[in-house]
Image 1 (cartoon, rainbow, N blue to C red):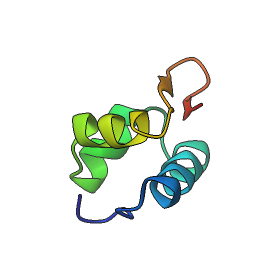
Image 2: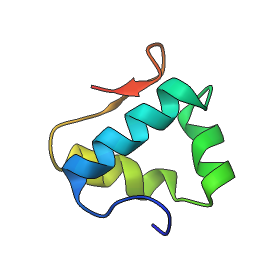
Image 3: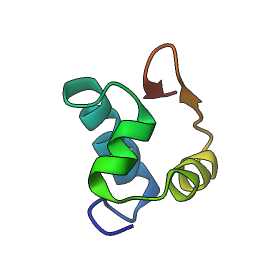
Length: 59
C-alpha cells in the first residue's frame, strides 16, 4: 500500500472516510489510489472488519 496508512486502525479510519466522502465503492477507491483491494481487505479482516457493500464501509 502506497498512499494509505499501514497501521490497521489508521487504515480503517482513512478508508472509511474516503469511502464516505469520495468513492462509490471499494473498487473505485482502489483503482484511483493504485491500492490492492485484497491487501486492504486482509489487513482490516485481521482486526475484525469486513467490507459491507450496501453501506460502502468497513464494519
